[in-house]
Amino acid sequence: DLDWTPDCGDAGSYVLSFTASDNFTPPGVTNIDLQINVLCPLPDEACCLPDGSCVHMTEPDCVAQGGVPQGPGTVCTAVEACCFPDDTCVMADPLCCDDLGGVPQGPGSTCGGMEACCDSATGACYMADATCCLANGDTPQGPGTVCTQPMACCFPDYSCVALDPLCCQDLGGTVYGGACAGDSNGDGADDTCLPPPLTGACCNDRTGVCTNGVTQTACEGSGARYGGDGSTCATIDPTCDAPPPPPPPEGVPAVSTWGVAIIVLALLVGLVVKFRRRPEAT
Image (tube, rainbow, N blue to C red; front, side, top):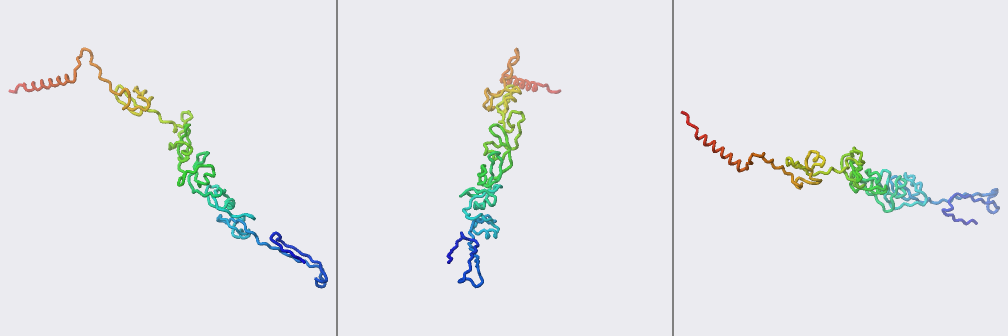
C-alpha cells in the first residue's frame, strides 16, 4: 500500500518503481515505473510596474506586464517620497523607488514641490523638491521661490561672492547688487563691501558757505573747516557765517547807514535846487 499526500514543499517530479509479481503484473512484465509530478501554484510577490506602482502577482505575470519582480516573499508597502538624482520627487513604494533609481525618504514622507534650494556648502542656488533639498543637507527657500541672477553678496569680513539673493541672505550675507568689484588696494576687502566714507558739514569761513556730505579729507584739503562726522550745516559749531567787513583805514571816519542816507539826501536836494535856479534863455 502507498499512502502519500504531498504539499508545496514536495513540488517536483518523482518516479515510483514497482517490481513485477504474479499477482499484479500482466504476463511478461517484470517492472513498472510511475512518474508523479507534484505541482504547486506560484506565490505572489511584489511587482513594480512601469508606472512606478507596486502590485502583488506571480513572477511570470509581473514580467508579462513589463514589471520588475521584487523576489519571493516581498510585499508592497505604503508609498513615500522618492527622490531622484535630478532632485525631482514622486510618491512610490520603497521597493519600486529603488528599482526606479531613486532614494526612498522614509515612512510618512511626502514630496514638497519644486522650489529654490541653497547649497549649504557653496551657497549656489538650484531648483529642487523641498523634501529632496533637505535630504541633500541643503536649505529650501519656500514654496514659489525660484533661483535668480547672482549678485554681489558681502560678508562681515568684507569678502564678496556672487550668489543668488536668497542664498546670500541664507548664509548671513548682505546683497549689494551688481558684481563683486575685487580688492583694488590689496587690503583684503572687496571694494564693493567696504562701508561708505564718513561725511559731515564743510564750512568755508572765508565766504560763509557751508556744504553737507563732504569727507574730512576733501573739506580740509580745500582749506575749509570740517564740522565732524555726521554733522550738518544746521548743527555745525561754531556756525558757518561770513566774517564781518574789515574796519576802515585810520583817519577815515566811519560812516553809518544813517550817515550814508543823509549824505545821499543832501546831494539830491542840492541837485534839485541847482536845477530850479538855471537862468532862462534870452
